[in-house]
Image (cartoon, rainbow over the protein chains, first blue to last red):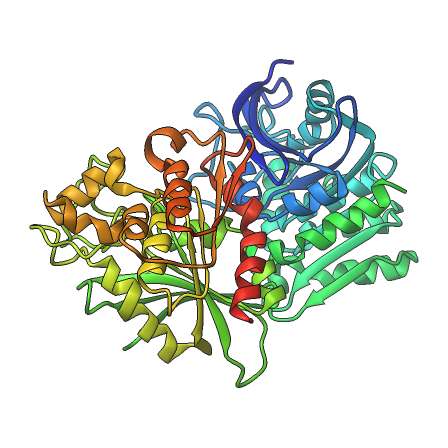
Length: 280
Length: 280
């Protein structure tokens, strides 16, 4: 599993790196970023994954996320993958920001022409963890996951499906029930086909309805987020959790929108919250 | 003095805004950003100016600078202007990243064809302060200034020329002696002409040699900065200050480069350092 270093910059006492590799699972070159906080020789670091939203790459959060000071303080490695396969050979929906490249929705597609490359679920759950475990000083028994919007959906669904792998799950303005909103109906319908039963493992609310559980969930959602009403529908998560007897922390943040100005405001709190659980 | 609001986003309890206006001094439309931390109705806020480096606009620091948490904590407004005139009518040196648009060097040009629009000195020292004072809740008797690279040169030279207006000056990897390095010789030569005596008021080291003084100067410089040896030459500032009996704080930061990964690492310390002086 060969890794190419695209850049490494000293930051907040540690190193912010950007790397690429050929993904066997996705079938293309993939880029991701890793922040390693200051640490001793031989020390291994707990891991916080961050899954990005529609149209993003690793770069958005890496540049604008304001996570490094908190990760340095708490000794947490921060990994930000891309959001879809990339490259000229990958089928795309060029006119659509919410489907195709930049919009992998963290699924393993089953439909043509998407199924060959659009396999972000297996990439995030399996291939990339193996790759980073082999190349960085990480303590893979201590992982947590967060994300924004489509990546909040990714964090919730991957975390709920793998409660033994992720000690805590958080999300910024997540799509909590993709099966019930336009972004998700479009993406899951085209990647997975018309049989909605196959969508349920990619839908946090449906996963909870179907019996998955996690004791450590934190969600921040801005009240001035233009997508709240039609696409994010935070209340569906609250309702599903209440019915299931789960007690997530869901915070409606007054006046905040969907941007990185919102994410960066609460990032340090999320890192600290995960750190407490990663080090428990 | 009319202001157009391009965007306003809630962040870290305050508002990050981006605004544009027609500049009389520059003769073009100009864009800048203002972060207002949380504050009470009727309260006025001390101001920290941030001048950006070559190729930058207001956007680089606004997105990557990691200043908002610290500004919110200390109650400081943060203003980031553009680095040159903009627009199709403005003469440029399109092939050159270090001259023309994005490279105003904070001078009032005297040479053709630059003198009409390249008047960043008057814009930063006079027009923009009047504009923001009229439009935001700022306490203009409490101002400090910082900047990066070319903008570090701007912060040092503007601060030194106006010690009564700026309580403290800081800089990240500044060009300390533009008259003595390739970037500066090119820019000052073309904007100001061959008579090097006219360059001295735009050169921090020359200003200090010529008798300007400031008691509160902080400089951070990365040791792994590719521009340190040929363009930045921090040691020339140390030397000039020593000769002049000034005692600036100049910190060589081991392993840091010229990027925003460096700036963002030390930004919170700079904000806190200025805040102490702004509130004294």
